[in-house]
Image (cartoon, rainbow over all chains, first blue to last red):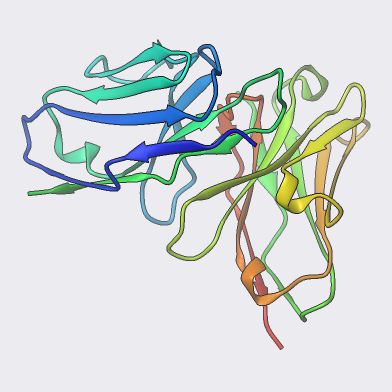
Length: 109
Length: 115
């Protein structure tokens, strides 16, 4: 299986800050990577697919980049609603063995 | 607007099986894959497998091979995930989601495994 290493596991930040979350794949996945936001008791919400493609309705302060094995999710100018847990997910259509990163809990400092 | 509606919570004994359903409405069921993801209490997301309904072909995460079966009924736009040989560690919320990007999610089904 392709392993996804997500860091950091916890991130403390303030409203207005900019933060970056990283995911590293154990082998190249091209740009078959998505990012999700999850709040307690709720299903995850897709933010970004294909590494950098923002889903409709997702604020432009969310952005994704990367290809191959290194990927980042950046949230600029944090808003109160952004404090949640974030997951990366590789869906490499060649391996057909998809996996999630371990998650990053974004907390208010 | 496509919606995925899952079956209700289940309580199962260790060693038994559970079958969770996921019914799609408001969209074309066969156009997309349906994936299954679970989340144990306080833990992260875990991808279990997916099915291509139009082909009836499923593939599974290695750690669930032999214990999980994902099927789809195109006539009712419903996907199913059956997990066998349940143990306490299988207690989790099970989600279905559309497409390999998991862009639309069901509401989740809590499966509790307890003697």
